Amino acid sequence: MAERPYIVGNWKMNGTRAMLSEARAIDRAAQRYMKVEVAVAPPYTLIHAVHKEAEQIGIGAQDCHSGAEGAHTGDINASMVADAGAKFVILGHSERRQDHAETDELINAKIESALEAGLRVILCCGESLETRDAGEAESFVLGQLRAALPIFQDPADRLTIAYEPIWAIGTGRTATVEDIAAMHRAIRALLDETFGEDVSAKVRILYGGSVKPDNAREILAVPEVGGALVGGASLSAENFLGIVVGASEAEEV
Ligand SMILES: O=C[C@H](O)COP(=O)(O)O
Image (tube, rainbow, N blue to C red; front, side, top):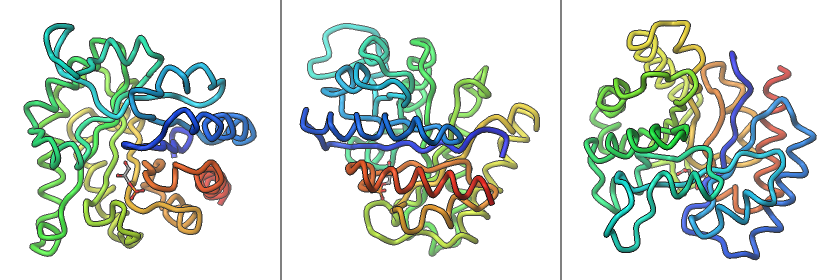
């Protein structure tokens, strides 16, 4: 694996200031696992507070608006999350695509705006169960990525991909390691073809979907997997750090 494994906690719509103690615990413990890059994406309301607590971990946002400042009540743009302390933004998550009808076009506009604001992007992709059962998982996922990859001029520095099969998110059901490896290989081949192998090698591909302390090591030991995007298990420092430990152990194998 070219880079350190990257373990990112996506807190989704969870967390009040009471979560700051968890963030502090994650940050302090992360200093013991320097072979792993650790980050969290709190809700907008906590980005600045977590950023102020964090010495070791990276801080990101879960979304951003595609535009500059202006009359968009309730929206937050990329410069605003960067100003609050975020260094990356998660874009294209299936919950945004489903709950907010986000299209590839809108996601692309958000990517452009995030890159302009100096943010790194974690670009999510993943198929539904129907698509997988129809045998179209790979073409669907690669189609999602083909729509966005050409925007990245400097992918080595700016892009991380998160493959998250929708049917594995929050369900307790993970894809098999064979399925994960196969999809990650297909994504890698697309990155090689789009950017060339040297640049592609610097882009990590994360797996997301019910990653927990008890399955983290097995998933993260898959050579094609460069880390994990963790939802539910990132809400407790103990569970999240269990995954960081799994990543650290998988790295030593
Ligand atoms: O962004 C994280 C993913 O949606 C995975 O969520 P989960 O770990 O709760 O399944």
